[in-house]
Length: 178
Image (cartoon, rainbow, N blue to C red; front, side, top):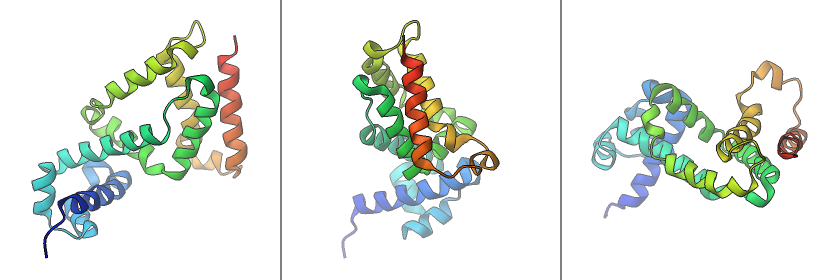
């Protein structure tokens, strides 16, 4: 039976997403990734050059998918913030991977800089003065991610994602009001 390299790479990335979002780079183990991906460790090294390359590829792929799933909407930044909130509710591993990368391997986030530059350019015309487009993006991400990043003891007091999403949208609307 012939090997399907693309299917193997996809299984490795899926397993790496689970492993690295749970344990970070330092705690992640290529042996567990290989076992979950139903391949051997050699395939990880062949396709990704090792653990570092696999982590970088995993972070880049997660952020790329988020960018595709939730592209900025300059005409409706508040609605876009709600969509970012929804994305993190559905795919909490993306934010976890990003946080691990910031803590352990900030160089893994270097590649998406161009993605963020494009997003900043996309919202530049919608930016509320005196805020720059980068300010607007940073604040929108902070507001949209607040529920996922806040202490569980606090967020556990209210379990109403629809209301939290609405609060995100309202907060961004108010931030952008002149």
